[in-house]
Amino acid sequence: MRSKYLTDATISLLQGVMKREAWLPIEVARQTGLRIGDVCALRRADLAGNVISFTAEKTGKAGTVEISAELAAELRSRTGRRSRWLFPSPKNSRQHLTRQAVWARLKKACERLGISPDGVSPHSMRKSYAVELYKREGLQAAQRALQHDRADTTELYVMSDFLSPDNENRPLLRKDFDVLVRFIAEAVKMALDNGGNL
Image 1: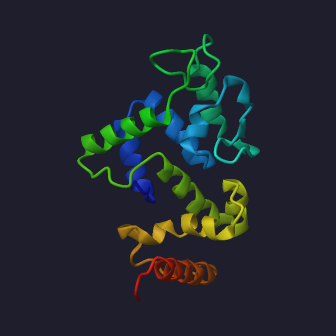
Image 2: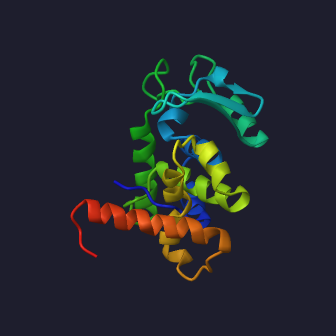
């Protein structure tokens, strides 16, 4: 399943129908852009103040990210001292919550709201984070934060909001133009490489 960009309105709706404890790993992903598997694997010791230290499972790259002071305080207050994990499994506190469990919770929230779960996943928070960071600080900042080796990978994330029906009438900003042109060129190249016709 390909995850899609979620608007703030959709994110607020999802948050509103989920228990706070179920929403917390998603909120960490939303504030940091971390992959949900990396969020689930965070240990209590990885949180110092409002800074999280992590090593990305997919790439092996280490990094630090900052979360709001309010979220950090909430994580510290909710984390059971019997577990070393920030998000222990509800079935076994010696293990951490799985990304599949977080995805299942999000899917149930979609069902409660009567919206299609297609494209709605914890990874949607990474895309939303990338879009917002790109708007504030530009492509290089988003690339660094997502730890992408290639800018064209980051471009797929930062342009994902253009595919949202809520943004169909959004004006194109000057800084978006170069990214959008490269995005289209890459899509055309991929279609041609896969034997597609234009």
